[in-house]
Length: 144
Image (cartoon, rainbow, N blue to C red; front, side):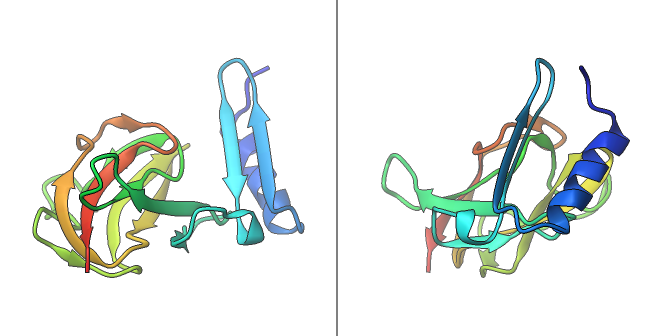
């Protein structure tokens, strides 16, 4: 059974109106994982401004040379607000936890992704307009 855009919006609305901290819905062709509030387990993190709160996780990268800003959801990654516009951040940009670093489009909804960490962008790990997976590194940051 496939979920329509309206089905997903309704699920997110119901979650927003409930006390649910974590929800995982998975079908053969769709996966929705929502975490919010005390369900967030990987500090430091920042909330995502959308219909449901989802974490942006920052953690030490495997090489130990900084933190990564990971995709909080599956969707299309955009570095700028519109085609041809300046990217939100680039290598060398100083960010704080609330700095918007990119957009991820999910089901025709644009979600602003905050850095969730303070520091300097040292690498852009995802290609603009590419599909990104939940937990995939988007940026590498040298913490302040």
